Length: 258
Image 1 (cartoon, rainbow, N blue to C red):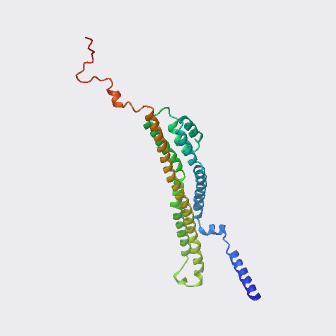
Image 2 (image 1 turned 90 degrees about the vertical axis):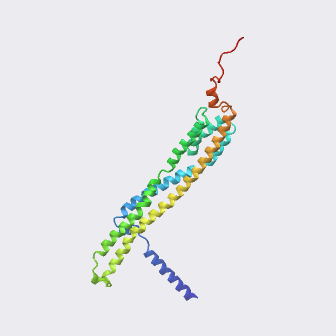
Image 3 (image 1 turned 60 degrees about the vertical axis):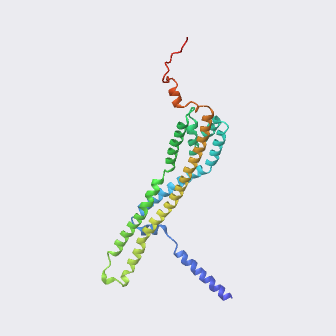
């Protein structure tokens, strides 16, 4: 038993030493990737900064918007002036600005109310798409730059090979150079995959926002249309008001006083 224990400890120690010798050295990997690693580094920095900024942006939105929608809509059922004040206090959030845009208008008709909602929703959704173009560019360029680095590395590694050297010890360095040339392709794929994963995450957040905007806007517009009709604005139609001053056929418009 003691012999087996010592043997297992020696094997474990040997494995640890092998792992330590195989430790990844970032500067060596960067040098092995060649010249294509410099633009890949720039793309990775752009992608990482955009991802961090967008994560903070969405974190602030997703933690408060549902509460804001419920407060504004429920308050609008009782008091429209109080609902306007609640929406104004949430003006630092996209959903707050969306609901405040029509509420701040002075006695708008339902069509103007709806137009204010739609125009504000378009502006806010465009702001939520900020950073998407950067991630799309990184997703498209990173694999191509990695492939370019690999091609350049293969050119350097293979240009010194002669047919007579194939299969001899002199080609050992060539295989090492080919392995190093593939580093840029792997790096480009890593940057592109990371950017694509967060890009799709942000797109899912955007689609959910579209649904929330549509539902909140429809609920508020429906409440306003009910208020508008109850206040008597729909009793007089445009056709009736236009025909109010007309004289019917057969009438002279002169009152008979006899």
